[in-house]
Image (tube, rainbow, N blue to C red; front, side, top):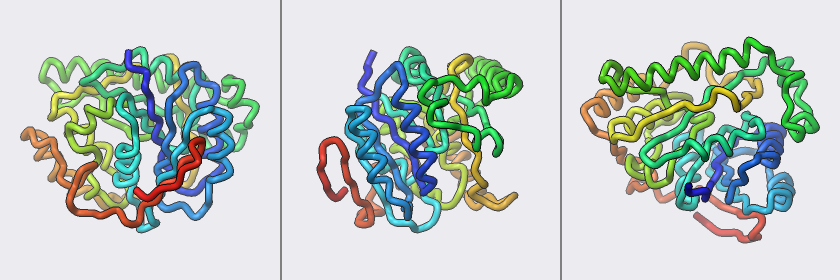
Length: 291
């Protein structure tokens, strides 16, 4: 098994949530080789936290920041892909916290030609306020989460096993959908479709689009997380109710994917952007560079 693992964490302010996810990474039974913070233009500076955790985890942490020019998660994640090493890339949003065996279980199930997805256990506002650093370091969330929330994760796992088989039987166009809040894929596989489509600006659908294009390229999705789980910390929504600014673009791109068109022109490799607003600092190697 290829255990060269790059963790790409998307970030936009909310510095304490970033600390929480890094704390949960520190207690993983499967260590990562590198962490990249894909920052969509935060005003808050995570330098102190990143330097602290680069020492605690003994891995380089690269902070790749682009200018704040609206919600550009697709471009930000592609910045992470460009900086990632070959091997497995785990994508996670900064508002996620993992149980201790999550990465180990992920790597045991990882295969080339596959992408893995999980289903987030969504904490409410009161539960999220009850998260403590000691709780994360212990890896024991039993006093926080409710049984019905764990059952919801297991229910989604069973549902997506059915989706997987229906897709294999050509009774469903895709299997489990890709959710960028937590997913994993080999770098060589995401490069087949040229990564996230940077035509998506504003909240939503950039991960749906990537999933459809991966299926079009023959790269199959799988949900394997029925015991280990990831928790989503509550925060106010990124958008107003009903706002779907990328809906029409996504519907057109989905039609193209169903016809077998899996490459996006404005992706990891493209001629549309010179990226002069992107900067990179690596902690642990103490290097500063432009990207």
